[in-house]
Image 1 (cartoon, rainbow, N blue to C red):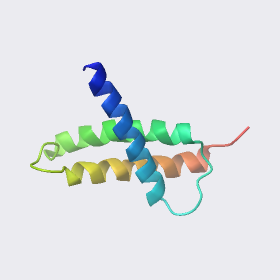
Image 2 (cartoon, rainbow, N blue to C red):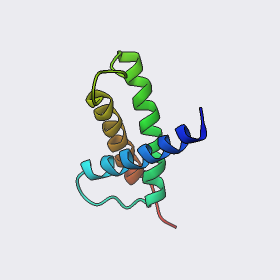
Image 3 (cartoon, helix red, strand yellow):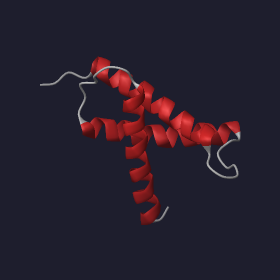
Image 4 (cartoon, helix red, strand yellow):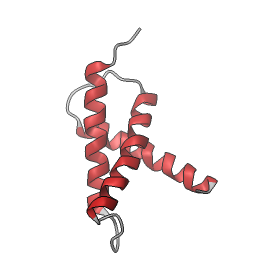
Length: 87
């Protein structure tokens, strides 16, 4: 993977994390950096799931893959908000 691929994966992961956080109702008391990490992991795992399901490469926008990624990010943000303790 080239450097540009890594950078684009990180940017997309940050966006996925933010979308996942927006989907979860209520206030999440987790730091932004943790949301970013969750987003990157959710983007990678969501892409892998989409590949297994055979929906990773479709014509146009990959809506199913995006929904998987955002859903995984929402689950990750919810789990992190329940377990994360400050200080």
